Length: 255
Image (cartoon, rainbow, N blue to C red; front, side, top):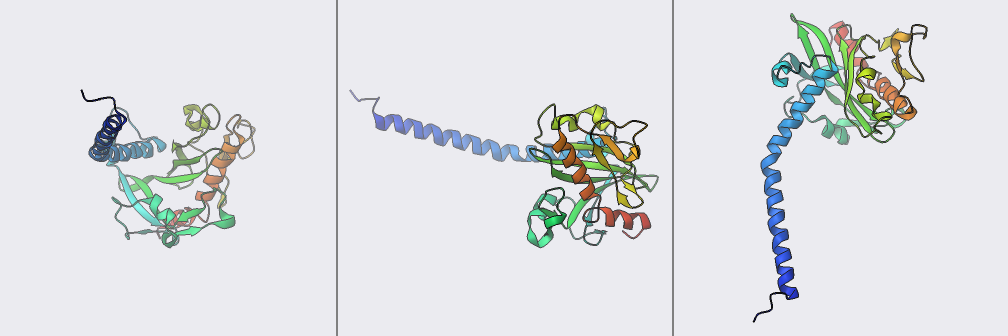
């Protein structure tokens, strides 16, 4: 009688199972990739709408996103560019390529190392006029890079909303950037004062007696470094190395 418990046969069964499982997983990954890509794009659109206070859970995201116009901005010139196809443009890849990004060195208050030369912006129009603009922002927190969207009203100074869609901050501490109560403080705040970026998180709470309260947001309790990170990333992206030249051009009609 053949010995079915030999080491060779055991190894053969194990290897065969590994190959079958690997083929199954690879096939599933290939088949499901289009679905994953579509879901990721849909989630991004939902976060863009939410940052501007436009997301309606009763209406499909795709239908709502029809009111949003996507454009690409050359951050070096501060003007729109048609150099890329907005449907296939990947800002994260642009940021990693030395040919299409800059090394920030001492200007890197957001701790992102390199800044892409081109960025996607989202325009919401009403009756043919700009109503809101949504800008992607990112920067280091305590444990992670925070990725989000800052929405501005048509004066290009008043905040319509801020939301982070990806980060790895500690739940209950830095993770409070997801708290609806904290996010509700942002609409109506102002980014600039006399052309200078003044938006910031402060230690403690903002009340009617806080000097220049229109530029200040409550700090995240127990998360000083995350609070500082949010301030730094906003001051970077709204400054001269970020969107400020573009916003000035847009305001003057030269974008």
